[in-house]
Length: 594
Image (cartoon, rainbow, N blue to C red; front, top):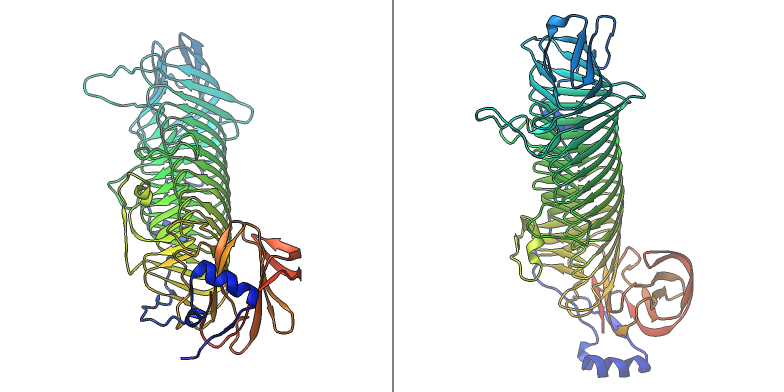
C-alpha cells in the first residue's frame, strides 16, 4: 500500500492538535477495507410513454370524432322550467325538465334549465354527438348531465360558447342506485372537444366523471368540486385544453384497479392550474404519463401543511410515472412526484416545494434530462435504485438530499413515526451524468446499499451538524469519473471507496463559517478547485480526474475569488490565497488530511 504524505504549516499544527487531539501518526489515514462494489447499471428503468402505451388499452378516440355536421341536428331548447325539441322529436323524450336522448345522431343543446337533466340512454352502436351552445343547467336532486347508456358520447364546446352545470349537495336515488355521482356524469366512453368554456360545480361528489374512458381534446374548464374534479375510470387522456380546478379530493383521476391495462392517465398537452385541499393533483391507478403541458399544482395546502394521513401528492401513479416534457410549478403538502413503482423523467422543467419528498419512487427512479429545482423538501430524491444520467438538478432538503433505500415511502422517519424503509444491500445510487447540487439538513447522499459514480458533477452542501454525513453508504462508493465536491460536518464523514478507479481527498478542518472559501492549487500555482460552501463546515470531500498520482497540491481556506460561480463551485476563477492548510502529494486512492 502506498503511503500518503501530508505536510502542515506550523500554525495549522497548533490548531490541529488542540481541536482533534491527534498525534503525529494520525496526520494521515489510509482506508482499505473489504467492500461490495455497486454493479454496473446498464439496465436501469428507462420506459418511455410509447412503450408503456403498448401495454395499456388504447383509448376510444377515432378520426371522425372531432367533427360534426349540424344539417340534420336535433335542437334541444332549454326554457328555464321547460324543454322543447325541434327536429326528429322521436329521438328525444321529454318529461317535464328531463330530456332523454334515445338514439345516436347530432344534438344541439342551448338555453337555461333551472332544475332538470339532459340524459342519454340508447342502445345504438353509433356515437351520440352533443353540441353545447351556451347552456346553463342545474339540478336540485341529481346530476344535470347524465349518460345512462351509449356506445360513445361526444360533447362539443364551440368557439365563444360558455356552459355551466351545477348540482346539489344531496342526491335522491331510486331503489339501491348510487349513480350518477357526478355533476357531469357518463357511464359510457366520453369525449369532449372544442375551444369553448365548460364550468362544472360539483356540490355532491365529483364534478366530471366517466365510468369508462374519458378523452378531452380541448376547451376551457373551470371545475369546482367537493371531491374529485375530472375522472375517467378506465383511462383519462387529455390532448389539450385550459384547466382550472379547485377540489377537495383529487383533481384528475383514473382509478380502475381491476384491469392492469387500464387506470392510466395520459397528458399530451394542456395548461393546468390545480388547487386541492385534501387530495392529489393527478392520481393514476396504473401509469401516469406526461408528454407536454404547463402545470401549476398546489395540493393539500402546500408544502407547509404536511399531514401523515392525507395523500396530497401532485403527480401520483401506482405502476409507472413517466415524464417526457412539460413545465411544472409544484407546491405540495405530500410528495411532488410519486410512484409506488418506477419513475422515469426524460425531460421537463420543475420548480418544486414539497412538505414531504420532492421525487419518490418505491422501486426505481431514473432521471435522463431536464431542469429540476427543489427549493423545499423533506427528502429530495428517494427510491430503492436511483440512476441519474443527465439533467440539471438543484435540491434543498431538511433531511437526506438523495436517498436510496428499499421499501415504501419513508415519511415515517419523521420524529414519532414508524420507518417504512429498511436497509437493503440492493439499494443503489448511480451518478452517470448530469449536474447535481444538494443542500441537505440530513445526509447529503445516502445509500442503504452502494453508490457508483462514472460521470457528471455532484456538489453537496451539508449537513452542517448532527449525526449525518456528506456521504453515507452501507456498502461501497466506487468512483471512476466525474467531479464530486462536498462540505459539511466531520462527525460521520465518508469518502469514495479505496478500490475506486479515481482518486479522492478528504480534509478535516476546524469549524469554518458558511461561504468560507476552500481552494486547491497545484505545485505551479494553477487553481484546481475553488468552492464556497453555503453552510458551516468542518470536512470537505473531493474527487476528480485532477487528483492524478504523483501530483502535489496545496490546500487553502479563506481568501477571495472572482469569476463564474454556481452552487458554490467556481469555474476558471481568479483566486487570492487565504490560509495554507496543508500540502500533499497524491500517492494513494484516498488522501486523508487532519
